[in-house]
Image (cartoon, rainbow, N blue to C red; front, side, top):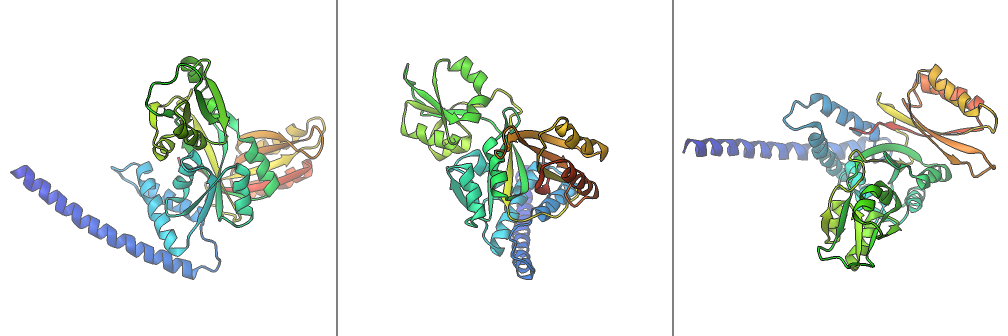
Length: 358
């Protein structure tokens, strides 16, 4: 009896807090609407402002909710309040159910207009043509490296990187939960996913025909239309297309992580915890790359990533993509850019943006 009384008292307190929280949420939404009216520009989304909110929450959080749980809750609060100010339309690599869609929701929340596109290039086109406000595309995987098409599009379209998301990727074998045909069935997935699961596939599905497709969600869609097709995809895609998870976490490395970027036409201001992405085309001469890298050391700037692509302008000329810690308006990064411009054929700042929240 005493326990029931205690439970009843606890529930009354929860009900009281729920009422208070709801009132505060609506008050916050009203303030967001007023903030939108008070803005001197028409920019709908400020990644630097939202990063500062998350950083403050991290400092304030005393538990028992962990930081990830708090960020998840506030992501939807911010998204819902932002939608009262103005609708955001976000392009992403579709169809529905892709990891790109999950990254979109992690970054912008669910109170946005989502526009799935069949290719990475069409995501860039949507943003360039102002069909969408922003786009979400994958740029790098921790086990398979850079997404070359994204790198090529960054040069071709000249859009700005204004944010990043790091997402742990766990792959599942999905399909209809029925006995598989003894021969002739196929496994569909994006080519990067097939590479990320190669060890598992070699061990458990030797000789099975592997079919690369445009996205894992497309693979799931294919599997939903044929009992002779299985797919490798996330649980979101399995739910979307009514498929069963036949085996989970089949990636070869449990730390498998994909980095996504937000592309747009805005330039975030410095938050003090930023990253800058550059593309540098070097001269075709001895020691050119060494000369480009030396200023990073001399200025004590941390280079976090480097990869390259053919420049497609001159034979055997390469463009190097580099990420470094800091914002382009920081004194040391400004000095770096000055030195690099003297040493290379060309330097393009792809964007300075808040680091991913881990």
